[in-house]
Length: 323
Length: 293
Image (cartoon, rainbow over all chains, first blue to last red; front, side, top):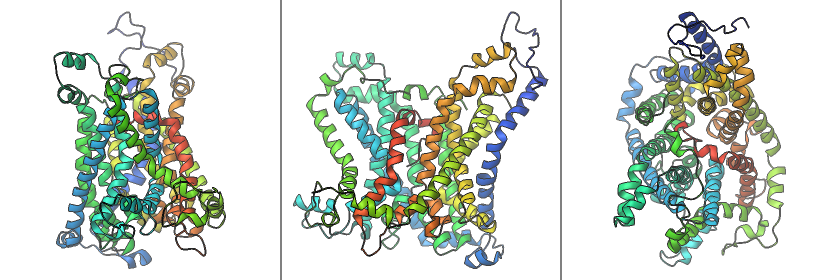
């Protein structure tokens, strides 16, 4: 270790004991050390994430298919994969489905999440702890396990949800209803699963924000005669807005990427009714092995997500996060 | 990290101190209802897992097992490829966690303790990579790994997982590094410590809790991954536990829901335990992208 930091006597901050603005030479050395420290992680990310995205782009301009997997042979196909994609109604349906489904999942989980966060602030200690534990348990369930549990809950014949719904006598006999094989019900089943798993993060994060909220403005509003709703709308909501914005953007990105739950509960069916962009890309590339076409699909999905991520990073920076 | 501050810690007692007086019965009823609904899937998983086989499928569901048994667990663990697949999971996840945490400690030190050109670009890159759609990375990685003979091998899965968890572990470690005041290092430097000594003697011990937190995050992400393992590992004895669980079936039965639920319990248990350990950290993870569901 040769670089013992003999501190240069600085002229621009007289009297300071701290190292002053580093000299150019020291700054150069600092940068070199930094890049050395960064290089192993940087290399892994370059090789296994950045380069693959480049290769994905390349593949989307080839006719890579099942045969290419065995022979390694493929041809450049120009923009054909993309023009095929635009002419494919399956693509447009998957795109629209992804957008609508994401909107429904985000709306559902945000609404319940905000409600539960608000609820947590009004509970005594016992109930608050109980609710927190329930939230954390739901959050911690791995998606593969929760998807299996869901399929069992909604199983036709012996599923407990069908039995419970039948007991209410509101919808008639539902015991044989096959949720995963009905386009609307399959959505509903998956939607419930996603909301169930998404609410804990939203509720706990917002509750943490709420417990940091100064109480005086709310009390002042009450003294001035504002009702609960009015006080919430004009004081709590503005206070939560930065957190809400970030959480919403993050939920949009996550829910747009949902794969496991759809794949395991409905497999994208029945008849492609729950096939979102991600599921469609996976099926195209790994089930029918039209890899070039799947790559084009994945490129389009990536572009959409990059747009969303840019918005997210911008609001992260605006909210004061210093990168 | 200024925005993370208000989100950081849930203090005891909501706004206005104990809300007991204000919320009243309505809040209590709502909370109880919510807990019943939200806990139900987990309760039903446990309830089914402990039922004797004959009580799993009944026309009127049994809400508590009569004579609870571990039979489903025994079947799930002994009559499937559980042993092989558990070993695969442990090896792959273990190596992933070690590698990812080591790399991210160095990377986070570089990103928080040094001024250099391109630092912000690296941070933005880390965030972007974290948000990429899974299929977009899966397709090219599969093609390249297939050519290199890495499909179906531990090494291929480990490399894919390290790349998968790195952005997040770097971000978590970075938070812990930022929390250590620079003055501590400067004090070390004044006492004549080298850069290396400052890192190893002063900084790393102080960020040790971050090492634990990011190990747990890396563990959960790699342990839970289904998509990559499902695509890479095609033989039953190559599966990891999520693939084992998703393809769960036992010989001589139709769908064995008792076994499936027992398998789900076994598979989820370590994750739940770790989750409870780092729950507080998770809540502060908003800006980090938190743990993906």
